[in-house]
Image 1 (cartoon, helix red, strand yellow):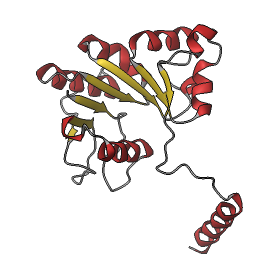
Image 2: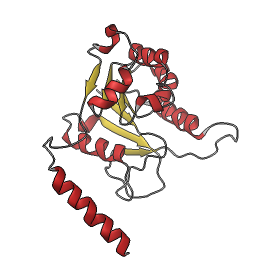
Image 3: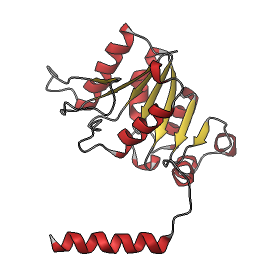
Image 4: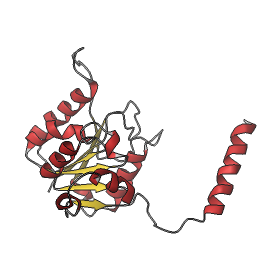
Length: 193
């Protein structure tokens, strides 16, 4: 079983300035029992990557009128037509789904931010469409899931397609006082610079 993970356009999958989505994908990849079958796709100008299974989608020769994001997704689709994946993970870009669904792979959509602030999931009919096309929709918190189901009928809100995977390795209670002290220390260090 081949699995392709598509990072958001401009998400940097490099140890230099890696984004939160890249770090999450990197950590879950190393814990996966399917890691030999996973390819991670993105676009970065950095030579050093977080893992060797990363494929950089070069964005050259783009038409002046075509959007960078659409061009990026079309490059991913070209690659997938040559070597089809059974599962495609789309991270934080619900608007990519309409282009990618033509590949007839199982699609898993991850939300790392507020779904109601993203193109492709702002409206109720867009979220119902996503639920009809995705095998699973995964949220990084109860809050992001609650935002997605906001305004949907109970039939949709109780769907087994909707899952929560918290974005942390160890889910422990955080000592708020320690966290606030740390924030104050970092703030003082930044002011001293």
